[in-house]
Image 1 (cartoon, one colour):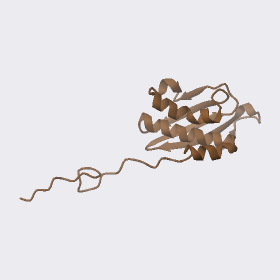
Image 2 (cartoon, helix red, strand yellow; image 1 turned 45 degrees about the vertical axis):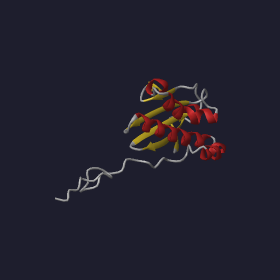
Image 3 (cartoon, one colour; image 1 turned 180 degrees about the vertical axis):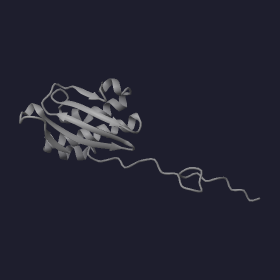
Image 4 (cartoon, rainbow, N blue to C red; image 1 turned 60 degrees about the vertical axis):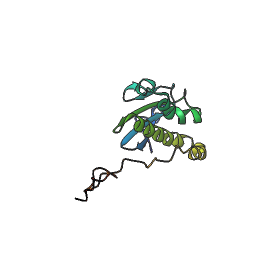
Amino acid sequence: MKKTEAGSADSQKQVIIATGRRKTATARVYLRPVGRGRFFVNGKKWDVYFTTPVQKSLVIEPLEKAGLENSVDVKVRVNGGGITGQAGAIRLGLARAIVSIKEELSHLFKKERFLTRDPRAKERKKYGQKGARKRFQWTKR
């Protein structure tokens, strides 16, 4: 999370940059505090990029809880993982960016678990085994 000034000291130019991760997905969230509610993910509108209602609600939830749906502009670059992992990564990055603007929301976001990185990831395959847990079949003779 860092604040950058691009160009002059205008509040229009201020952009908050935050990173979110989930599984193997990584999201770079660029949040402009003064905006009109535009939200783009990889150059597409967010509701076009995410198709299922679960993914849409996951992504927009931090903005709704903060009441900033129509007052900030968000641009996200996300790569890696699947579409659900990307939605979780965006949620974490967006929550971190919002907290850097409004620190009084930190307690609410922690209670809602928006600021907690989900540590679950695919378990690696071990040598001498068929998969992460599955063994090769044992034969007595």
